[in-house]
Length: 299
Image (cartoon, rainbow, N blue to C red):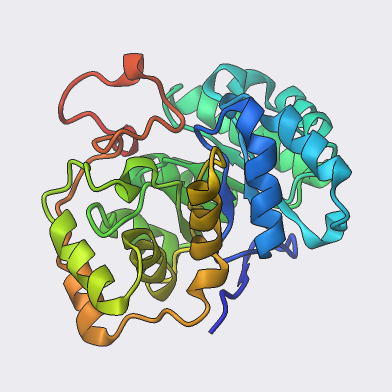
């Protein structure tokens, strides 16, 4: 079994890869090598963002690549500070990525308040009408912020990218997405791929991985795919181990399928962890976090 593309339902004709490559938290001087390694393994979806500070380097790498632009699926996100000038932000990302358009543009965070996040979303829809963007979605949005969009009469997001994992399964958000034709996508897991995670049930995940002869990262990806969540695992490329991780996370997934009992065991890892509890700061900063129960999806 190979990872299959997932069609978005907003009429833009976009199919996002079931396994994309996350570029969050990858240094500009390292991201080119990481993207090259991902493309060599067959990955064709690149999950980018202006806030990552490495889109220009990704664009330089793509310019050198022999892979046709039509074979790639490029995603970028509009950072909070650009919510009122989203069109300009999108055009900068397009230029930095050396592309004519984006396949998917996301509002990176709901943390700017209702008026500004809706303004950003509307500008992205206009970018779609102008041909700069093929599909529009959101990132880190909870049920309340998602509901604001459709209550205003705007189309539901094609994608809502969240920190989705066995430890925080976001069942309310996932249910909303399923009911509104929105694809729930799991964002880069960051420290979830580290045994020194804050998740108490991490040993249960590693038991399944050991029994399958797989890495914990691969079990996370298999769980995501079998639960219907396109995912964007990330890795740097500082050494041969990192490059091997990139291989494992894509071509190494072709024959990995969890049995019903293994899937149930991974499901039982649920702890209801809030976003960011495991170290991810994708779409917000440390200053945004206002307490132990803080979570961007609760705005």
